[in-house]
Every structure is written in C-alpha cells, then in structure tokens.
Amino acid sequence: MLAKGLILAHNHPSGSLKPSKADQQITSKIRQAAKILDIELLNHIIISNEGYYSFADEAVL
Image 1 (cartoon, rainbow, N blue to C red):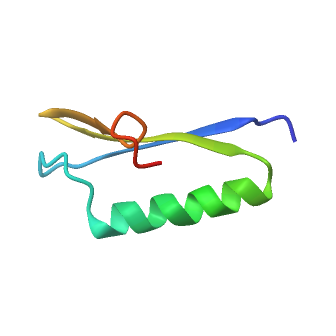
Image 2 (image 1 turned 90 degrees about the vertical axis):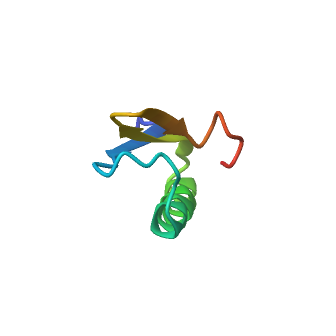
C-alpha cells in the first residue's frame, strides 16, 4: 500500500463547528483502523458556513 496519511473532512450544515460525540468516536475508530494499515490519520476537518474546525489544529488527534 502506498498511502502514508489520511485526512478526513465532512460538513456540518447546521453551521456548528463543535465536533459531536459521534464525530469524536468515528475519528478515534478510523485512526485505530488506519494504524493497522500503517497509515497515519493526519487531520479531521469539519466545514460549515461559519468556517472550519481542525482536530489537528486543536491538538485532539
């Protein structure tokens, strides 16, 4: 496999930039799954009309 890193992104149509519990849980699960494949989860970004939230910028990865 040639992938070395992974970045997740999704939108919040509500405009809220705060990650939900579900966002946090899926980030954790995908990070664990990627690790098994020797792929690093580099970031998870939530996008809305209000801007964006970056798990990496907030140091929660």
